[in-house]
Image (tube, rainbow, N blue to C red; front, top):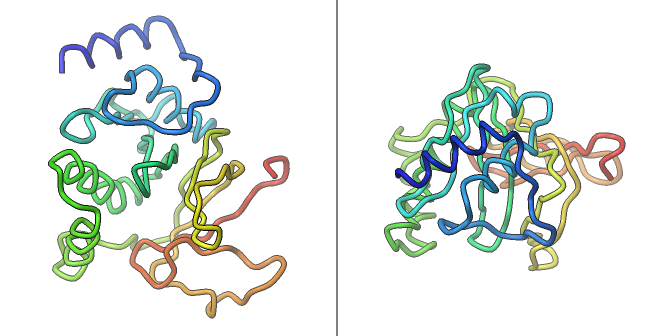
Length: 200
């Protein structure tokens, strides 16, 4: 914990840290300064004033308090993905606690299949809640390495915005050119993806 606090103080004193070229994953051994830079890169309009969390040996730890209601961190759908995200206030209240739980369980050595089951149970029991109103997640970083279920591989994905769409499926919005892609369709944490012009 002391090391994390010292690293955070250095980052705040020196300004933004450059992310090393070729960075494709993070874990508890990734320096806090790099994680903070990655987290901020997700939301240029909000990252500088957002609360920041970084991965440590017990899961996420708060590296900085926020001033604007946003929370930024490097999420990992899988242990081999890299997904810098900045959540608005609604996501901070509903989605971020799930992200925290997942990484806490990973740090404790829980198998991924068991974590998935625990998250599903959490939504059913009311421990976790789906977003209750519209909102967005910034993922505008150049360091998005996500799992593509069609290719069954981790791929680089351009900067994009995600909008909460609990339980939505492709049937709800149609398919084909122009239709939004849905992450985790049919689940409480489903999201619409929109790639802004200039990020393709």
